[in-house]
Image (tube, rainbow, N blue to C red; front, side, top):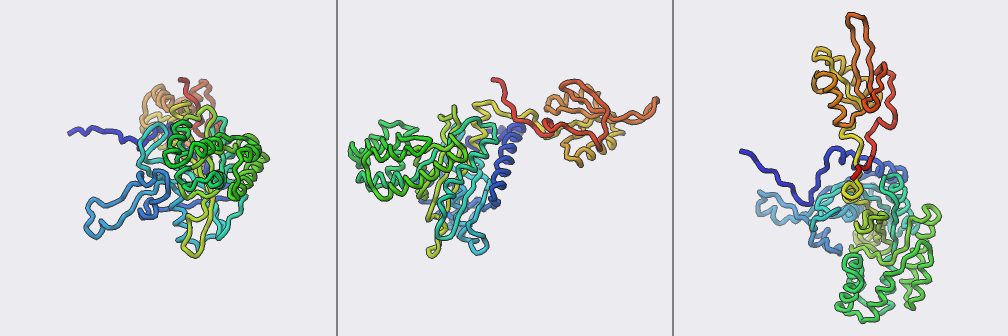
Length: 449
């Protein structure tokens, strides 16, 4: 009986060329993270639900619970949930393994996460994130808050994403400003302001008033959120709003230090944007969001911030700062909106032809010699006419076809390799032939739409 296969919304699967593109992104990300001294870890997929709850935003509504279908009464009391980000499990990991870690601890983590939100373009229920964090014992040096976005700037400069901006704010600015205005529900106000890009200023103002703010207080919140600069002029712009508070002063100084560092290392990339809020409650200082120029409507593709009390056992606190690339989100948006893909659907750069099935061992020996020298290749699946084998390679984007030599009535025939794009065919030895660097791995290309 035939079974109809129905796609699951929010659980994306990539075709081979697209997966090769994603792997290119992952390899680049990992390389840069390791260049900056971040060490890899992997955490379990599940955490106790009580640890996942209460992080703010809509996370509480989006957690996937985990339970065996055949669970008995004893198992039914165990509440586990799939992690919705990598920061919460990392904080638990630090607490559990603190005695075996070197502080400040620099880690990167590339894993799947699960979030039960409504699927739409660039938003999924299962997706891959790539995180870096630095945590320390008791106190964390502020210079790490400037380092995070600069690592991301290096990653993105190596990826085919085009121009981008990393928007930076500091939770102390908003908290101090709101306190200076006389508002007491800092977290609630932040969540409302965080909706600016989704619902617009008029609706945010209405929600603020509905939550208890006066018209003047709501206007102040919106005025603060409109401030944006790629230098430290944002400090004077905030001062001009006439609000004072010690926490505000602290936040302005910290953000100014981050922006100054960014201007000296990656000019024009970091932007002070005081509407950036980040919905999760555990952020306490600097926060980040990243947008691609021309793709602002897609929202942030990389975000994070500082957290001071997420990892604490009641005696010792491990403050940290981190930033996370939404790899699945970024790759799918670039595929869907900019036509990114790879030049072939296979890693193979060479197809080794098979003259006949009796000579397949010779073709396999050629492939083995090429692979030993780092040249990806495959042996033709059938000993078809060479024209068919060439078409097999062409359909997959394999640029070279290798024709094994042998002995015939005229004597020993040397191997030959053909560039099927140009038609050029030359004699070749598998122990010395060099595949051009440009063809060794699939290249990132843009489809014409």
